[in-house]
Length: 66
Image (cartoon, rainbow, N blue to C red):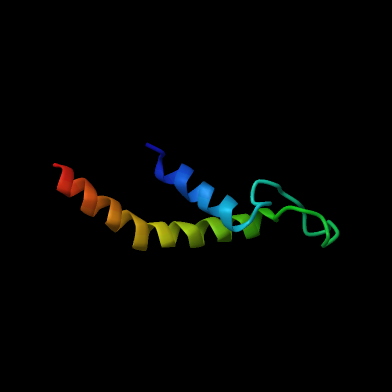
């Protein structure tokens, strides 16, 4: 099973195909990628979605298996 970090990273990549690419604020706007700050904010948003919505569902089904 994937770790929490791996799942959140996959969520980020699904939402923004260029999540894995980094650029600086001085790069032209048409270049692919995200600034480190933008990537951290997206990760934080996806982490909140995971924690509030996905984790409880996983816990619910894990409890049923035991």
